Structures are given as structure tokens and as C-alpha cells.
Image (cartoon, rainbow over all chains, first blue to last red; front, side):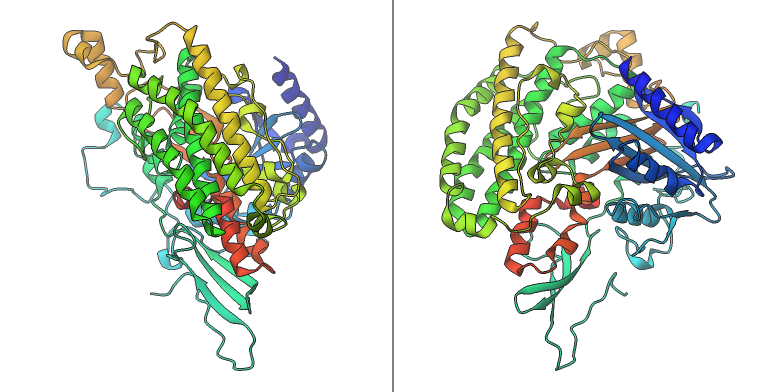
Length: 166
Length: 404
């Protein structure tokens, strides 16, 4: 149960610093996860990097939850290589105006991860030095990982979930 | 249709710079990479990387496939070491489902993963040799990749895109021929690797081409989220197998080689040493297998592991399980999980969100090639064109993993 105390420690330190800006703390499969807000995200990330030794940015990605108030979750995975502990930070932003400050000011390596997230989900990272599409062509016009874009012919009926009791 | 990033040769006759469009299908780049470079003589002044030429939307496809149908997609990420991707994906789902694996399966997996790590490093290191002008080394060692593929063929029937194993174990036990081939490989490979090292490691021409070229400090490497042999060559001893052990890697005794300056020579040395360590791990695994009960090749989880076909025809429970698994009707917890394995190029992560449906709600691959490659253009500035080419070989960027 060593990891849990470590996570608890991090949780306490984060709450001390950011108060109620750190919400929905959970620990799925031992990985400390919390939700914060886009006005403090850069402060949270730099605090994690500078003070709590989460020196390594593992990944940035996004998840789309259509129909919700804040329908796009931007997810950061950080890694403290010294104490061998990972952390997941989420920020929910609105679908209509998906903007969030860029993390390239904290880690240079965030550059392409954010470009990929922009390409696939349309999340606009404010202050990003070079926010262009990276995997898809420039004139694609849509952000294909959003749930409203179907993978296959939407008229196909043999793969609908309701036929399988859902 | 306009191209992504048009860069035209400067028509100004006074200009000293030449625009060179290196790629997307250039014979020196071993894959589909486009770099538009501004050259001053042979020196690169600036470069722009364009990627995405073989983007196949795996993350979108994965949202529409049951778990077991996603394994073939992972094959096509880093196709030089597909089994590591397959195992990484299986272990992600097993973590989600809280499946405890028998030790014997873990060891069999370790053998397969380390063999593919050797195959991956053989490709990278021999190609560095090839690109510095030493075709001999390429031909000498490359046949052992063939021997590794023969082992995979014996284990799962496929060679390159293996689709090896299942969620919950392997689809069948290793047969005697497979073990014989592994033993033969363990006997013959060290001598060939030694010979390979004799040809390159102290070779004056090779050292002149690689030492001190494309040096990267560990601060920069961490800043750019590098992982794998590239990060270790800069001197950071980060290896997922050690820092976050999976598949019983904690039972094995091996070393994590690190370099000092992060140049191409260090990367070459780190990969070579990792091959030696992989051989050590496989030897230990073969030894450990002797004390494990024979015939166990999957976990006892009928809810998630397909029953043998014979039972499906004769046994009602087996038929039900078979139907439910094939239709993607398994009861997986509604949760999210991140699992990372040490791939050939670094930390290969799977971020899986399950909402209880037949398919993942979201699956994201943390692809080391994609994240490592973003530094290629900035670090090429000021470098000779010929050095940039071997720099790319030594980064071992695999187009399938780059573009997903």
C-alpha cells in the first residue's frame, strides 16, 4: 500500500496549493487522477513539474463526451521518474469553444502531442507556436475523432449496439 | 489540391540556399518521411517534417472493434517488433479485467518480447551500419532476424504482423520445435553478435561517422519526452521494464545500459548491449520454464479466453463463452487504465477508456516514434545532410508507429 500513501501525499500537497481547483480525485488502478480547470492548468502542470518532481510529460490526448456541458476532456499523463509514480490530469472544456492554454511553455515535447490533439479533436491550444494539422491533410475540414463522425457507413444496421442488448 | 506545407525553392539568384525535398519516398530514409530542408552547401539550415503519409486512423477504428479485434491493429504500429505491441495491448486489457497471469505465461511472453526486441535492434543497428557504408554488417546480422521470425512462425503461424497471443494468454502452447529453435538461436546468436561488434564497434570509419554526431543532453531529451534507447543513450536509466515491471520482469536479472553523450555512437552501443541483455533474459526465462508446470499457456478465465473449438461443439458453457467473447459481450469494468510497456523504441503506452460497451470508448496509443521524431527537424539544424540521414536511422523511426 506504499503507492497509495504516496498518492495521498501528492493529493494533500495539491489541495494545499490549489484548493477546490483540484476536484474529482480518484485512483483507478493505482494511478492518481484528478480534474482541474483550464484557467489554472498551466500553473498545475508547472507546479507538478517543478515542486512535485513530475519531470516527464508522457502524453497529451483528448476524449470526446458528446452532449455534455464540457464535452471534451484534455488528458495529461505525467511521470515522476525518480519516485516511479504516474499521475493523470484532466481538464474538461466546452465543445463550442474548445480552447486551453498550451503546455509547450512547460515542456517543449508537448508540441506534437498538442498538434495531434488539435488535428483529431479540434482542441485549440492557445499560444502554441505552430498549431497545424499533423496526421491529416490541411483541407480535411473536420476533426475526425469527434464522436459525431462515423467510422463506417452510418446506414449499416448490423453493427448497432441495440442489437446486442445495449 | 494543396499540399500540407508547400515550400518552394527560392528563385532569388542571389540566394545561397537550396531547398531539398527529402522524401516522402527517398531511398535513404527507410520509410515514408518527408523533410523539406533548406541547405547551405551540405549543411542543413532549417527543416520542416511532414508526417501522416500512412495515417490509418487506428484510434478511430479501435472505437468500433471489440477488444480482441484490436490486436491486429497494434501489429501495424511498430511492425518491426509487433509481438511487443500485441503483448502490451493484451496486458492493458488484462489490467482492466484484473486477470492474474500464471508465471509460465509471463515467462513465455518475456521470451517472445525479448526476441522481438532483438529483432528490432538488429534492424536499427545494422541499418546504421548500412547507412555509414558497411553493407557487410547488415548482411551478417540480418539473417538472425529471419531466425527470430521462424520462431514466431512456430509459435503463432505469422512472421511480421504476428497477432501473437490472446487476451488471457497464448492461443496455443509453444511446441517442441519452437523451444528447439529458441535454444538454437541462443546458441548461435551471441557469436554472430560478437562478430557484428568486432566489425563496427572499434571501426575507425564507423566511429568517425557516428561519435559526436547528433549529441543530445539528458535535459533536452527529457524536455522532449524521449524514451527508450534514445533516452538511455543520453544517460537516463529509464526503462519501463525496471521502473514499472510487467509480465514478471522483476524476476529477471538484467542490466539497463546507459550512454553518456546521446550521440549516434552511444545509441548504437546501448542497442547492442540491450541485445546482450535480452539474450540473458531469454536464457533465464528458459531456465525458469523448466520448474513451471508444463502445458499452462493461458490464465483460467473462461469469461475472456476463447475455449478450444472441440469444447465449443460439445459443451454448452463453452459455446456460451465462445459466443459472448466473439460478439464482444464480455463484462469489463467501466474504468480507464493506462498501461505502458518498453517497446523497441521506448515507452509504448495504451490509454484505454471502457464505458461498458462492446468496444473501447476511447483508445489512445502513446507511440514512442511519434514523440521521439518531433526533435528530428530541430536537431538537424547545422548538421551535415549525410549526418542527418544516419541520425534518422539511429532514431529507428518506424513509419507505422509514427502515423498510427
